[in-house]
Length: 110
Image (cartoon, rainbow, N blue to C red; front, side, top):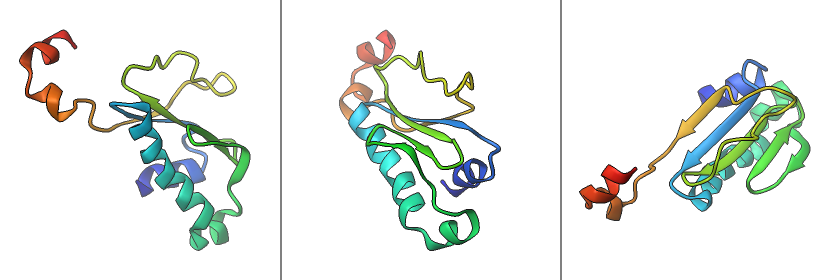
C-alpha cells in the first residue's frame, strides 16, 4: 500500500485504479488510501494537505493532481483518464467470489 502511496505523493504515478470483484469492495479498498491521506500526520508534514478538488467514495484527486479510482470487475475501465494520462497503476484485489471459485463453469466463462 505505501509503495503506491509513495509513488503518488512523489508524482511518479498519476492515475491509480483499485479494482475488485464489485464496486463496493473496490470502494472499501479506496477508503484506506483516502483515510491515510486525510489523517496520517507524517504524510501531512512531509507532503502537505492532500485533499484535492474531488473527494468522493469512488474517486478522488489529491492536491498534487493524482487520481484514485475504485472499479468493480464488471465495470469498464474505459474513460478513466485524467488529463490524457491513462492509468499507470492498477491494483487488483480478489476478482473471484468464493461461489465462483467453486464452480468451474463460471470460471471458464470468465
